Length: 224
Ligand code: DER
Image: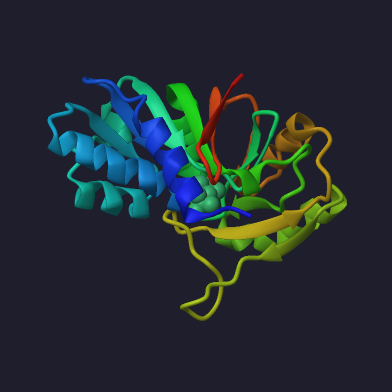
């Protein structure tokens, strides 16, 4: 399994790629949080960058870290995005553990370079992690049906600290969809995107340029 030290090493390794003047996509989750923290330290040391958050949480973390922020709609280019993943197989990702994958996918795919930060527990030969699917609230039963028709097993993501389901930053719900081994992630991504009521799914195919894998002793950098 992963350890926080491994996540920290991965996050800090990606933060070292950031150069002065860059606009940086700031991912969501505990591994990307290490990159945000490290970037805050570098900003305090004089690094001139602007961050584009991918969620309410990453915006708060970036503000606390003292990183100057820009709204996505106000930037022309994103030079580098740093974000985590729930599973990585040959540069294809499952994301959405934090229910932030809609805006993450926007920022991560808009970036010139998308660097994924994980600990080694996220690596797999084939994707098999349940795929988070963000749905319009009114659509959750309809989409559950179309997911079943496509061979998946959907479950509405329940909240821990509130009654009822998790509600995303966009006001939507999340279905976690079990498909078993995903041999053809590109095909499944298209199937999910075409389902009426789906806002965004957590399959990121063809967007990751680099993966920094934190281990107990260091970081392994995988370049596509
Ligand atoms: O929600 C997300 O997509 C996060 O990036 C998630 O996939 C990884 O979170 P972690 O770094 O806390 O494991």
